[in-house]
Length: 219
Image 1 (spheres, one colour):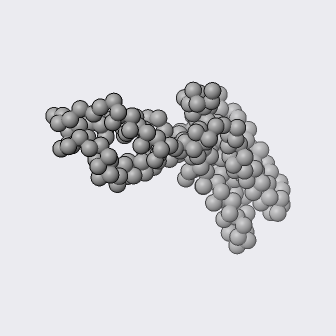
Image 2 (spheres, helix red, strand yellow):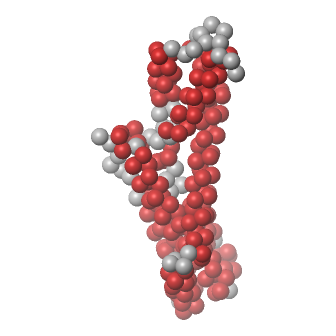
Image 3 (cartoon, rainbow, N blue to C red):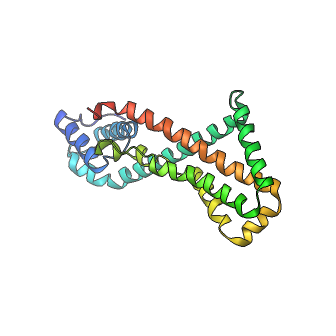
């Protein structure tokens, strides 16, 4: 689109400060993309060069933009967890570990009684789930802690699946049905546990990436 007005340095500073104050938790990529879009649209559509009025009219768009980016971050997070999970069965280096874990769970589910099989499943999965809660970075500056990327660590649909699987087994009727077939229970247990491990791996990877990306805020 042809520019009707060229944004000034003062207006650019105002725009950046406006986004930083209103949406301080957004990630750097989304912030840059939003500011670039607003600058282009403002320069192409403004009639009087009033940036404050323009931003007032675009508030709903900005909110939708940010909500969409948060959903995208969650979707990418879940996608990465599933990709990590499938490497347990496709990576030559990981297949032996995967088989070892599976046979350990198989041995326990076949040789323990109903009570201890259930408790072994519940605590092995819940310990991993609790780790994702307590392993959140706590010694970071507030600017980093407020980032959506940090707040999403250890969360999402994928982490909810093992948790729900644990909660389901709390119902005695369902627990009885699950334990009637030890082979099925073995796969049930293994899936919940291995998916939880995939969540932890991705959580730590993303945490390190975020800290490196925003290293300048740690000084």
